[in-house]
Image (tube, rainbow, N blue to C red):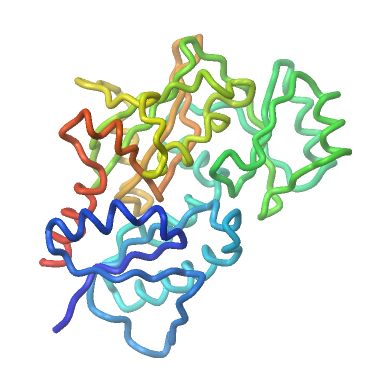
Length: 306
């Protein structure tokens, strides 16, 4: 009986390192591009392990309905009790920062003060909660989509009445601006639901926006990005939040993820993003024995052989 690892995705470029990792261990795999594939849900799904790599920023690459298509496919697979890595619940969190923050609150993990708004009027109303600089960002985002920095409400009003950019799902987040010194963020990687490594990112450039999103972490982690000197895998990394992160991931069907946080000037770690479609910087990894995609490939192949 033929069995394969099926990669559910919408971005061929991001798959290059994973393909190489599969080939190194001779793992059989196939790709399902959610903007190209069609499915007959009346049929029984094929045998194998199914890895969901759908991205919240799919629409920015012209794949507007790829997440919705993925939701249908995952439901089909799960109804047939197939082995799905990063399941339907994981997809829900990937495409909604609002749901991410609800989970962060549930597990007592600090995150920036955040409000949610469905239209321009509500955005302006919710902004009154801030007395210090704040940012806006898209609820379904990634790649820094919709991230704008505002010193005050009058700046926001000019933006709202000018070149306002709405989120693809109609929900805008308003979030306190976290100042940090030094200007770095940390991304904590997990494979098989367990801590793999943490990487420190120099976010000193483009820091006029949110230090988290303005440095465009998703793009910089793209395996084709040559700017590797801004990344450093941390040795002997310790963080009391790791267990909380792992419990959150387990509770939400997330087995592969990258979680980002920033350390404020007050010394508090503020977690601001849970990425269930994670990429790794090859230059940073070249200086370490830890390899993200190799770890994923080995994990998936082991699941396939069970």
